[in-house]
Amino acid sequence: MSFSSLSRGRRLALSTIGVIAAGGAGLVFALHNSVKATELELHAPSYPWSHGGFLSSLDHASVRRGYEVYKQVCAACHSMDYIAFRNLVGVSHTEAEAKALAEEFEILDGPDDNGEMFTRPGKLSDHFPKPYPNPEAARASNNGALPPDLSYIANARHGGEDYIFSLLTGYCEPPAGVTMREGLYFNPYFLGQAIAMAPPIYDEVLEYSDGRCHYLCCIILESCT
Image 1 (tube, rainbow, N blue to C red):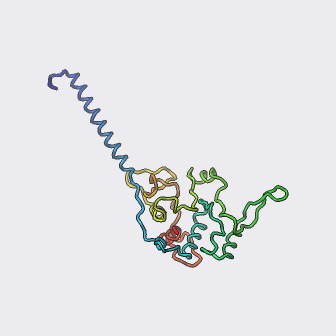
Image 2: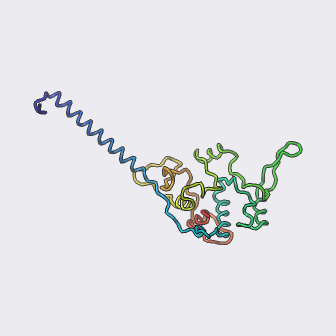
């Protein structure tokens, strides 16, 4: 039976079905392409770190500057629960310098003989103070995201220093068709490409005590060590 021999009503019905089918196919194609468009994650390249060799070690001056980056930039949001001030001694600071750094903080201690808590200057045995009293406070201050602890962050992330360097230098405008929710930033190196942390490092965000270069890439290089 040919299409022309069908009644007008049947021809109209078949035409409508054809249009719907074509539209559905177009929708499936569009959705498929939109899913592919979100596959924007980049993998961090491999960088020639000076401490990456089998017989290589970290540069002590660089570790010291890395601590300064943490103290002046990262410590506002990120904890280092597993690092104590004593861990700086002989690595990045002298014992006297590490003691002076610890004493800059007031540490809650106790109870005393009366059962009361009290504050005292920090000691070498104290761990780095937390930026927030609990995870709920941390989330409330960071758009619901919990800033990760940085004690072993290079070991905790696939790619280690390569990933950290790429992430911190990878902030950019989202590509066409990608819309970011308020409070999120596009970063192709972050899983899902939407990160709640604003770009934390920029030119001259801090000054090193030794007068070292304080531009973005220099600062991030130190923070990775």
